[in-house]
Image (cartoon, rainbow, N blue to C red):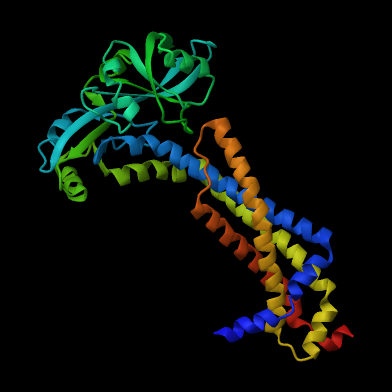
Length: 391
């Protein structure tokens, strides 16, 4: 086991010496790889922020099983189904309770600037906790008051003055759907790709804002199970018992339902994946150009090695050594700049653009593969080189 390590230690680092011989070209190569890594990091970061921001509310909802309309596309386009299905769900063994939730978009007129923005509003029975958000649950009595709402302090937009006044205990009125409402409290969720912020209110206040919405038509059914009940089994029983006008999803399936919409039914998911592939291809091309130029510049030296009896495997190892060096050294500035860009983007948009260890490892592996592919292509001339043709 120690013999290969001993041989590696004794081996002349030809790859490193060749790369650093022309320092200008070496730095340009590292910059190119870092740029490719930044492209991949940013696209993967935006994609993760897309999924995370648009499923935060899903994860916060206190339910084991969700009932939605078969026509629902995502949280922003839920459609409705009859409340009668919730009463029927209560008859299924293992079900503890089934509560309604209303979801819709509203036009919010900023009381400070007068500008309008699109917000997501959720309404539910304040006597039945529907979200696992401590700030909301502590203020449910507030939304029992007529035309009272809770506002998302982590929203994206010019809401600093509104939030400041509410924190000071001052009354803040705003216009929603041509109706004046009072912001009676704050909570924190954050912006998403579908809305700048979220409002939470009671089901009665929600119906006042949308008088054309029937009280018996709901967006989401929140089904809680009795202890030790199997969600998969209860979900299967609900699918059998309920009609075809309702779709039954476990919590994991509900989150996946939202992710699939953005991944498959919109162009955004495709664009982010395409951006990652473009970054990868840019890196392959840059590394290939560097290694190909280096191989051509040292073709006679490689031919001399072959004439001395060195096998192709040794010559390939030199090029692959260069590829690994480029991958590692190019990754360091790539991830450093990406961390700064993540912080800047998160602060500017209030989206969860966060670096994770898994993503760093993923991009590192893609960088190594990128450089190895380039190295494999660049060494074709070395393998076919004939010493007799070089001199």
